[in-house]
Length: 433
Image (cartoon, rainbow, N blue to C red):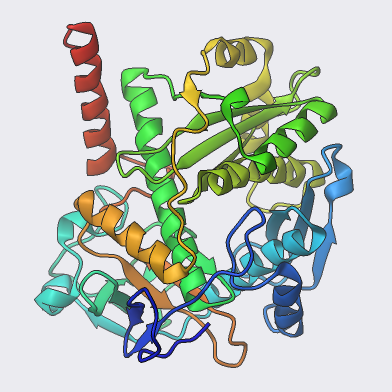
């Protein structure tokens, strides 16, 4: 895992500030990593207390699927006190839960340089275009009013660029005083960790692409009543996914897999799982994006299982009564009949595996995908705390769509995506919709 800019390598490396990074992959079971889960767990365990993690609980046995799921607990967290992780081994699920909690800790206590200035006062080559600023639509932002900005590194232009502080941090502003504003709805989109900083950057890029793809398809489904493409499970040839599907079947859990890949073409899937025989037990979703389609499918399916177990365990502190009611009513007889009536027409072998042996190779491919989609910036904020040396980053890609928060309004990409589908519909039917 050499970071040397002078070492010979097929890929040119990824520059972050003054350093050029490279990272070869070593682990490929259900994910891509530079280290095994056991190696990662040994490395992070001494730092769990520093991050406020008091317990990593194996809750796999609360369900009948047997897919490893672990919950992490940070009882004194100022944001979310519960995290969750899944994996093909107990070590992998434990690492997944622990790293999510570690990410939260880092985002709650970031130490980045910042500037208090209006957008107009920022250097022209170091700011996000106003129409691509991440934030609440029709919010309080004004380009002539001072805000707090965090400084990160733009992978597209190799220069420092500022983003709204609250698009990077999970708590307030860097200076505590009355009357401070926040025009950005805080969330965890693009918050990622890894064994190596490039592993973390790749994970962050995958997440922001996933959220954008899901937002595009969700809006198209709502605006056009366009059905989300459903994958024919029998066409999937990955042994890992075939084994997962067998375990679902033996447990009496029905998985549905939908292809929500956007115009960017990075394989993205949504999984929905429900009890095959008992109604009103909940509909659970998971999502996954990766250059290797089987990894994207695996992430979606296992995240849906994780969602199911989180609900069963009942310890998630951001799952409110409205969420519980909505979830329990989502698998009624009529709802299931409507879902199952949609034909599964998508071939599970639709995408080739474009993942490379290195994280710099994957990141270069993802940056090219973003460029082709008209994206001009991809910002990385290094949140790593030197005393722990666990790489944590926040990835912010201006122009991509994010979470579907309350008061959400679709941005340019979902509108354009729906418009393209509408034109496609008209071309096939000869009728203007």
